[in-house]
Image 1 (cartoon, rainbow, N blue to C red):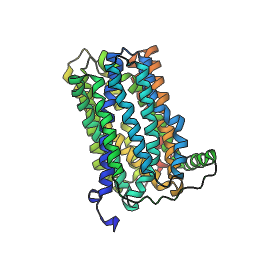
Image 2 (cartoon, rainbow, N blue to C red):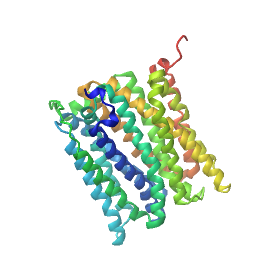
Image 3 (cartoon, helix red, strand yellow):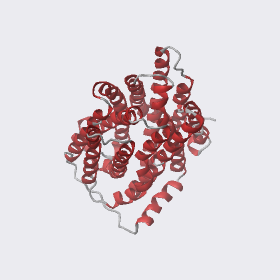
Image 4 (cartoon, rainbow, N blue to C red):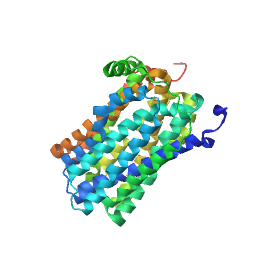
Length: 414
């Protein structure tokens, strides 16, 4: 039977996982190469960097809820996923072509980032219910751990590869790797053989269906708390991300290749988190893991803020590598338990819309956070943005611990 076969031996799951590893690695390459192109080659200002960060997340706000409703209506999700990857590949391929032609500008990068963000929004809406087709119900928590660990693997491989490629070929040509990764991902997903047997939700009007997903999240205490924490965390993470590359280049005086290498430690931490989170969740429960994970959320912000460009490069690098390792493990543990709670709490017929509601809020707020980070960087300077981010993500600690999730995570016998 399917549930007795280890996931690593299931062909379709391996294809799906390989597709995500490939695509996410390419995305991590562009995550460094695109802002480096904007900041180092096109002279983007902090505000323009904020808009660039916003462009990748704005589609979650504009199309996230509708994508979830549409996903629940679909009988087959796989063709939509393939199409999203193909469109993203074509968009990314225009960057090096525009650079060669002398046409590349910051607005061009913003437009490409918006198109790819739109593809990601639709892809995620379709991929969440599609996972239930590929993986048996008893193996979904394990499968979610594997899928979340993909981002960690990509965070290890992508930034280091990006730093090397940027040094060898310049940032615009490095983006070719991301375009190719989208194409490979599309091919792998298209090769999945599991029959899609999703029963489409009957259409009752777009906004009626969207409202059902919103009510499912707001009306469930666990889903409501997790969604709120995700919003706070991602808002300040986007503000941090909007200024970090400029901050690392100008304030800390780090070479581009070293920035990529340091980012990889975040991914290594994620791999550690992926290895231990299933065991911790089985032993202590998802709620206690969530409560412990948020304690480490401010660490990376504080470490970057106290680092100095005038000190030894090795000391700055070691400090930031260690904080990235710990923070990466904490974020991965939080994400896995977040997904497990959503799959457990959301009704099967509403999974697409519940996931889309979380995507709309948790991912959509990245657009606002990126814009806020860029504006604050212009008004206050770069380092204050990091301190504001540290204080902001620290709000998740009382939010979790004073919620029903936090109370359920308290040690037995109290």
